Length: 450
Image 1 (tube, rainbow, N blue to C red):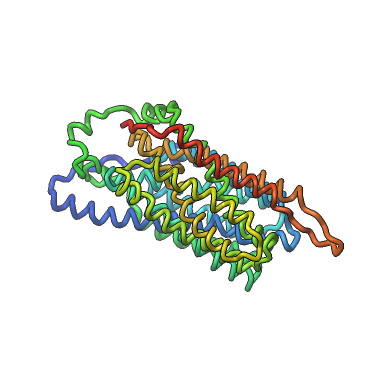
Image 2: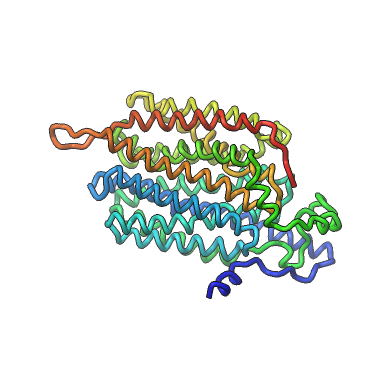
């Protein structure tokens, strides 16, 4: 049984090599369009599943179904499962049939989301959300492995940024559409609607995605793009496992992982608690708060879309300087958002634009691209897995600590209304942004290894 499952997910054998250059060009052109659209739109759907819970948190809290501490614990379970799964599945992705793995992960995580709509038990809710977190890890690392399999190193920075913007599209639309659905039809439909949509999307993903080029008789992308000759490629006979172990042993990868973890604390503080912060601390309605947070997502589309191009075009493919510039702006934007008084709505809009642009540029850099740049191509999945382990450890800690701080400092007024104090949580979020600025300085001159 286990062997049959492993065989199902394993990448296919190399097909008979094609020799007709015209046919090779035609197949590469078609497959590259199909692969890039599949990983971009497919990854957006993964985030439709994930971010619906952030919108539904506020109604769950207001209805008294769960308190802030319980919501934080549920979110922490998700990110803990995601942290472990992203690391393990990242290492596996270097050997997998991406088409099958990517589509099945989306389908199963969407199915679990639908089941959560029938649930109001804390323990069952946490279990289902944790399982969804595991299947969510079928997304990022396999997408990057596929990107490296079908596109050359000269294209990687720009295309990585475009691909990464997909999750902002999914998240931004989710905040707006799911909030409207929840307000109109109740919190349970906030799970049903995106879940069913993503189950359908998974079927389309299975149809249009492709395995690696060699399975179809095409040459490896390094040979096709002229980065290596066929002989040079054949001489690189280092086993995948050896390349993956090199990733684990490299200190620069660990430093980048810690920096990414810090970015993810601030990122998910806003994504998972931003709606609750605005409704409780600044008096926004649910639709108003969701709309405000969605501003950061649409700004994030621009940040993710352009960050690779900026570093490729203006910094000769080096990420360290733009990373520092974006990090400093992130600290300012985070502090502006949490410390500006409620009556200054203009400051909320401005901080959300700056936050969205910079945090998602940094997630693109620190959350994968900088590690992929300095690690062997054969171990792209392993590099993503290592960074993912640190990143979602940060996200998991953030959920637990933020929920604990928000719940611990709450008060109850004379009318029995619970009032949440976000002061300590805000300090925590800003401190994480500062750490994300300082840590990358330690690997400023890290060099590529292939």
